[in-house]
Image (tube, rainbow, N blue to C red; front, side):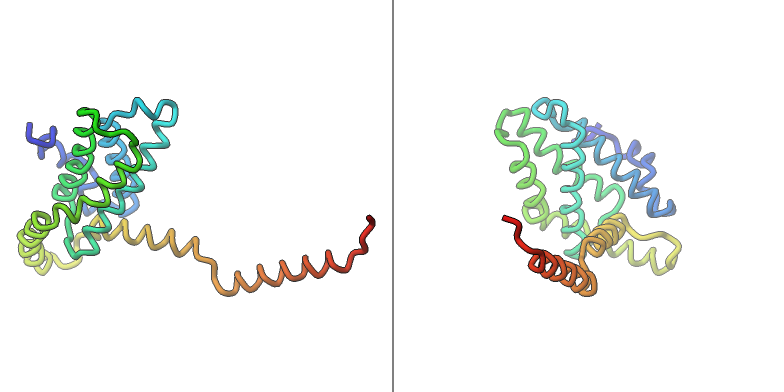
Length: 192
């Protein structure tokens, strides 16, 4: 066993690591894997009946860390990405076991938000070492492999943000409805 509590050979069996899988399958399997890591490595006694909801909340928040790595140009995928996710979760788990976490959610957010900055030099070196090999291999392979997991997550995040954004046309229609409602209520006589 290694420092992370799991052998790298075991990770290779994780289907989200296989870039030849369909993107939607990879994301579903990755989300499931992250939930499993959160459930196994953290103490959820404080959450009680809301454990599943809290695990999902943490899974979603962890995407920030993955996207932070991606935005810096560090195209980590597969085992390298898994290592960093597990290290961030394990850091929090160790603090919980040492009874140093009083309020879970702010502490979890701080660990996730600071992870990339605190470990930036090591991550950058790792990404540069991997990058030279990856770029050579990608030139030979072409686009045979699918997008990286961070690219898929960025796409998913962009689609969610786009779906939430109200278009100018929708804003205009809503304003017209509100104005019509106000005009209609102003035209009604007062009974009292």
